[in-house]
Length: 190
Image 1: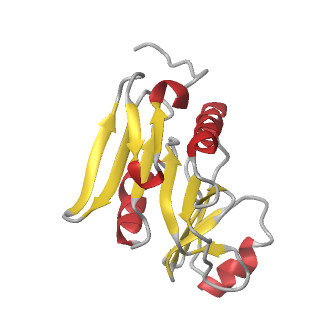
Image 2: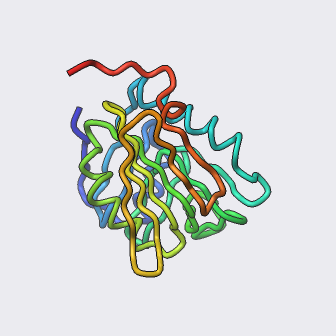
């Protein structure tokens, strides 16, 4: 299913219009992009990751937000990551508490309709946001996770492709085992 886009509108028009919609829409430089529903596999992977984070995150320091929380990556770009982790108190662009401005770690589970945006556009958006220390992309069609972490000399990319791989998220003092990320997921053999 292709992502549907709508004609250009201002940020304020988008905020007002978005509140009346049944589906979520991202906003990129005037373009409104409908977010399609997710597959069972996508949702199961996301839930597995939530379980893993709930068992390792220090919930007094870190706050987990789901795909319902909109993130402002700059004043003309608003996205809905599959999961967002905030370090410290969540901060918002305004009193409405709809536009999170201090994501610390963001996670996207790929979908056929959004994979290219997750790996290209959103990657550059997240790299430009100074509060983000890590961006994790998890593939829903094969065992594969890409972790981008911010360092003194720029961003570092690590790829994990084996079920016995463990993703170390030192900034959260957490580890995610791919066998647990993909728990209960059956892949078609190729």
